[in-house]
Length: 78
Image 1: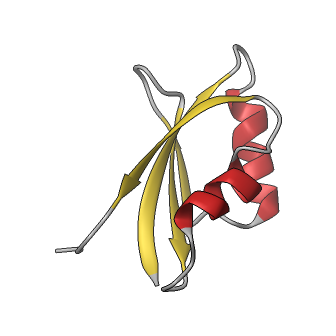
Image 2: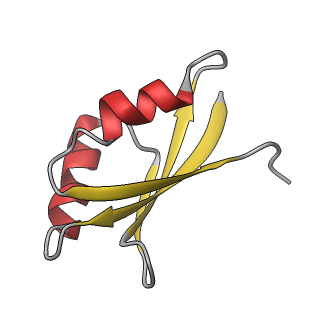
Image 3: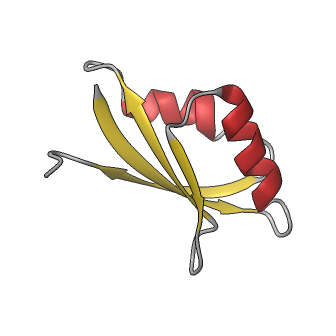
């Protein structure tokens, strides 16, 4: 499995709605609310060989209330 993180900027007042939708979709490992430029930090795991761009485009960015995403690809956990 490959882990990666996505920072999500939500439409005003919709962060909890987006977090709940991600949770109900059962695609995220962990979901955190954050302060700053983004509203949520979400950890995902996908099988090796999965196209992360397609995963984000087809499973994450389609959730209503998301304005922007910033993906952080990880290499190794210590």
